[in-house]
Length: 358
Image 1 (cartoon, rainbow, N blue to C red):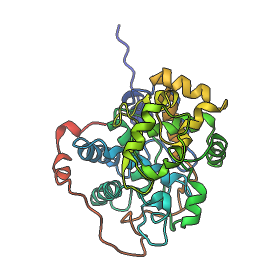
Image 2 (tube, one colour):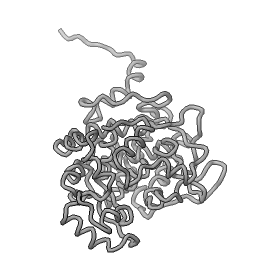
Image 3 (cartoon, rainbow, N blue to C red):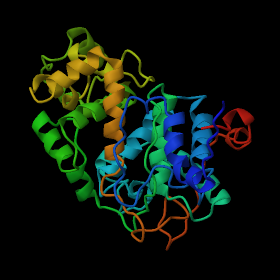
Image 4 (cartoon, helix red, strand yellow):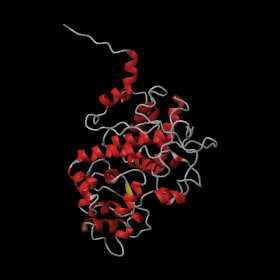
């Protein structure tokens, strides 16, 4: 005898976002995703702009397939947004009094800013005034991790955009620096509601991207930091003959464009450029986690996913707070030309059938 069960249509609609999390995410069976803060939800745009996440996915794939090294720029942009007055898209605002002119943000990639702006432009054409720039950046960063061979996971959405931006002093006070020791890092991350495991996991984003010579020159001169592998130190000295040279090196010398756990092996081997990375191995509060992630790639991805989602909810604006910017680089009260990229193939690839599923 066959027994048929009928699920009411209303129940299917209610359960749809949750079912998608189980069916789509390859890590959903192993990770209990952090619950959304009030105002955010998984699948927030299911009704108001159902194609939103697919559009971000398609465009990020089109941008990064020819040059995956661009992923690091988008990921860094998101980190710098969230640590300064929360994940509110304020770092995207192009203003001489805003966050971009601050010293830590002067090396944010123009191409990363352009990618976010172009995605936003596409979303405005499909769903006007529905998807915030803060969410565009969060989703783009998530996709950048995936495109760099990292984990694929869902994040809560529903963020609103800020009505203002921080000044340079506030930026400097909130972004952890490359010369920080572990105590300074724990204090910085702790002020954002993040713990020691989050610190180590999120530092793993340094497995992709570049570091400019000036950010680690004090580890080379006047004497070489003894924690540096001698061969690695010599290669850095050759590449960076002085601190003012405008040269950047890969932060991960093993797999520079792959989002994996090699960063932690590099820490253990004395082959990381920042003091803020090397210090994680010498402090008892973080050492065991570094060693665990160096030994187990899946453990790194597991904890990074949780920590990334936690970070993505720092001091978010929701509901009637903030607004939805029409152009990410300016407040709604102003106008400015939209930044574009030279990736002319993006628009045509959006309609390719192979991009149709999440």
